[in-house]
Length: 138
Image 1 (cartoon, rainbow, N blue to C red):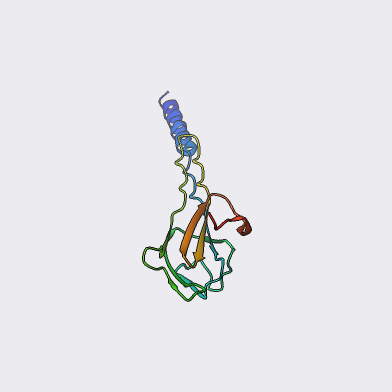
Image 2: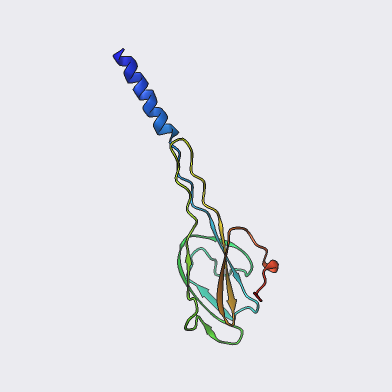
């Protein structure tokens, strides 16, 4: 009977260890640059963005702090006092797993950095947006 108890305990322990749910993965993050009138120069310190990037195209990136600057079509350097100069990206975290269920993955995040002559605008979405559907007049 002693070996039977050990076997039951071993099976129970294995069930708990194997059956424990895992945590969900963090959501993916995508960054897109937009401009009504293309700046004459734009720089962002993000290794995930290619040097020959295209406007209105999402690029997958990682969470972090990314300083940026640009010269608008009027020749003014941004960021100016009071404007954003660093893009802080934080991924949506996955949920923790429960005893017998896995945690849900975090939602993907789509970020638009809009480079305007009045200063940069940052917009966050939890869904993919088509560039032509966004309204800058709001």
